[in-house]
Length: 81
Image (cartoon, rainbow, N blue to C red; front, side, top):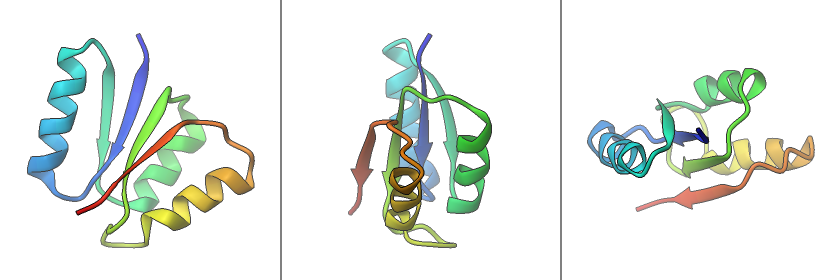
């Protein structure tokens, strides 16, 4: 089963996304900060990341830049209001 990381600080939106993905057969981890996402990405292989740009501890783009800088090919879908 493919695993997807949802990095979104709006809990209601994160739940909706995670539930939809779970209904489609994906395993989902939900996190609300860049710090937590960094830790998860360091130890877990994800098929994709859904990434909010406006997170409480950092800009989501900074995490995306880090991923690309270290040549992590994980697909990232940027989600922003």
